[in-house]
Structure formats: structure tokens, C-alpha cells
Image (cartoon, rainbow, N blue to C red; front, side, top):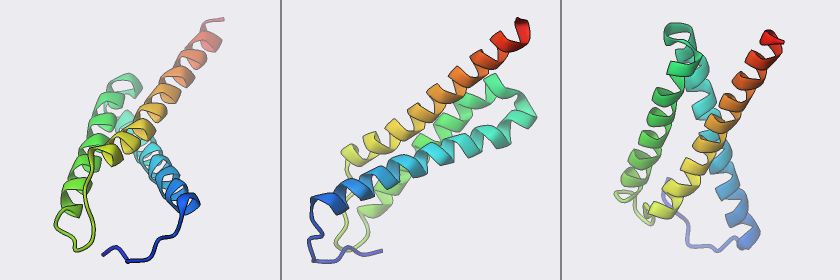
Length: 103
């Protein structure tokens, strides 16, 4: 979608960046959820992270071809923060579950 010329202000910018964080958080969690049934929960995390970060990179690259848009490494880092937060929470939840089962 081409960018408009209007400035929506700081709050809109922050909300858009938070939305990207959340979208990539969800993308990672959904890929992990889908892959875990095929390769197991632990082994599914790395491909889920790689797919989500790879998509973030290609999305920013794609934006360089859209009129009025730019792809930036900063946006990839924001997306990657969502990815890594999801991975951390998945790892943490799996460790808690193992500790509960072992107790």
C-alpha cells in the first residue's frame, strides 16, 4: 500500500510499530504451533523464528519497490523483537510445563 503524504503524529507511529511487533509475535507463535506437530516443540522453534525473520526482511525489501515507502533495518529489528519475544515466551512456557510434569 503506498504511503500517504499526511503526518499522523507520534502516537500513530508508535501504534503502527506496536502492531508490527504483535503481528510478528503472532506469526512466530503460529508457525511454531503448526510445525511442532511435525517435528516436536523444541525443534520447531528455530524454523518458526527463521521463517518469521525471513518474512520481515523480504517485507522490508518489498517496500523499497512501493511508491512512497521505504524498507528500513529499524523496522526489521522491531519485527525481530516480536519474533524473539514469542520465542522466549514459548521456551519459558515449555520449561515450566516440563518442571510441572517432573514434579
